[in-house]
Image (cartoon, rainbow, N blue to C red; front, side):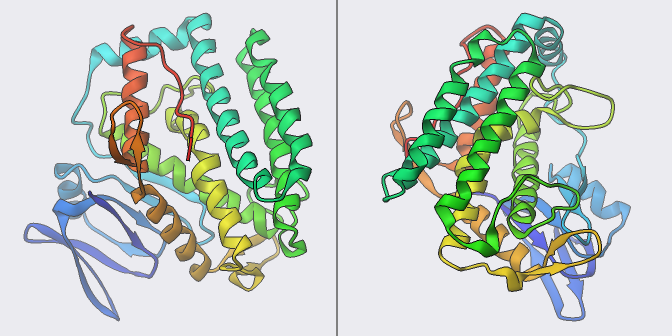
Length: 331
């Protein structure tokens, strides 16, 4: 399976013959191009057009993050699976309010189902106090069918997330990582910093997988399409955030693998030190490589493959072959 390459320190990356090499004061590191899925850049990086040309030729997206760990943007190589037919189908399902509403509802429902799965995991481990949250989220899910606007779906999704995040305090029982309320750019406490960083990573993972399909990442359904940003990766990520990002956060804090010493405070908010970022990247990378037995396929597949399959399911829905049903974790 191809892997992601993470650049955490400052240096230079360039093409060397038929591969990439990253070089700084610590030495050289050769990156086997045939094993490379994408590149994540967190340090200050020097690169040239020859590197970008080869990344495009080998179909390797490069994702950039600033000093604080915020996503800046991606070098999205020239699309090699362009499909005018699929773009038209995506646009058709966006412009038709009924078709758009159906897909937007599926993304919210898929996210909520996997949130319930996470809560059930902890309820079964002596956290019965989470039952009230579980039933409240179930009640909110029951309102999804009655929504006639995407904005109504997003409001319910926000209420579900609010209840769910507040349950983190009951799960963790760790005052250092009290949730309080969702804050962004900059996050105002440790757990919000972890949520923001983890979410930005899953957004780019899904974006990398979209690149390998005929789908256009600029046309989403739950998140409004506009002129500036990718949105389809945000939609699909909703399904996977609970079981990949949130489980990772709860595990790292629960096992005290990450502590408040892994963060810095500045005038604007809380940022994570490189050690904390590396830990989260390692855990997400490990999770994406975990294989589970897929019931329909009858064989072991990795979580990264499951993300790709979700996109293929979406393609089939857009072409009218099979109605899209979001992935629900059973593990």
